[in-house]
Amino acid sequence: MQINRDMNILVVDDFSTMRRIVKNLLKELGFSKFDEADDGATAWPMIQSGKYDFIVSDWNMPEMTGIELLRRVRADAQLKDTPFLLITAEAKRSQILEAAQAGVDGYIVKPFTAATLNEKIQKIFERVAQRQQA
Amino acid sequence: MTQASQNNPQLVLAKDLVKALESGDQATARVLTQQLAAQDDKSMYEEVSSLTRDLHQTLDELDHLPLLMQTKHDIPDAAERLQYVLDTVEEASNKTLTSAENSLALIEQIMGQNPSSDIAVALQKLQDELNNIMLAQSFQDLTGQVLNRVILIISSLEQSLIALIQDAGHDYNAIPDKPKSEQELEKGIGPNVTRESKKDALASQDDVDDLLSDLGI
Image (cartoon, rainbow over all chains, first blue to last red; front, top):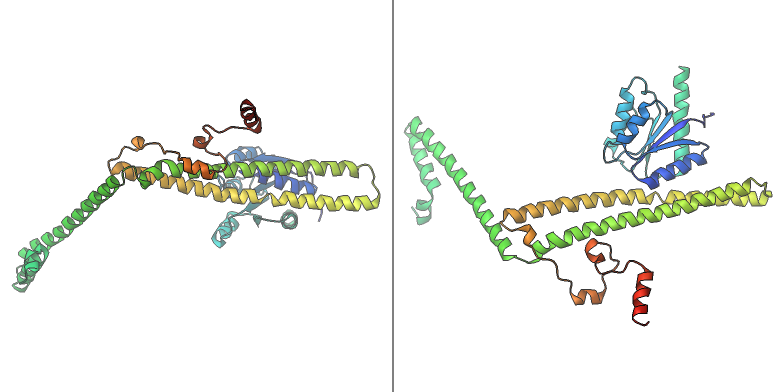
């Protein structure tokens, strides 16, 4: 499936090294338009601008967690369909269930590989395409 | 009746209660039940205040001794050292990422000059290796999260101990500074990472060289 490599992506993580790594991996996959946020609280107003086609977020952040950010996105009529990928060290069954319930599109546990990221992104956008056809 | 049971007010009340119940005297039984319950509360209060007294005494005896000194000096020192590890590892990780990014940009530049297919294949492999180096830096995020959590635990332990020390009537601020023993310096204390240990430490090789040259070395 052909993914639009021109999409605007927001990378949210409180660790700057992680944001750099995710951005570089996404670049490697052919994406080029990124913005960064260091917390859910800083990401939320950015997302509300409606600019982003894809959100990649950490879970555990000091002000607003990734799961809270996801809930806000899903609760907003304009933004609710934005694909949302969590990349996190949180790996408890109950947390993954919680994320699924909140409407996450993909869930990657750290540490992860470039192949995993690629695979999840493929899957997410296949599903998005199916949703749009339906 | 033994001496012990005569002196036990709970037992006396309980026996009276049995007597009252047997004779069907409900009013007396109710009063005795309440008194019995009150006895229980009283002994609990006595227990708690004796514990508090013990604690106070223990802390008094510990005056200037390990717990007070550790709370004031060692615990903040440990937290500061962990913060140093967190910051240093992050800095190193960022340097590695910068170098990997710069190298990837160079590879792209060479790729743009139509290299031979052999070189192109080698560059592709090099690119993969650099990406692996980059991805390996994600350990910093994981260890950083762990350190952040431990620092939080240490700080809350510190707060609890300070509260305990002050509840026992000690003036936290009056706990004296920790003497730096010659013996400790002799053994070596490692990198000077805390505010306390940076006192009197030289910041760079240049400073060390300056000092040495002042000494004629």
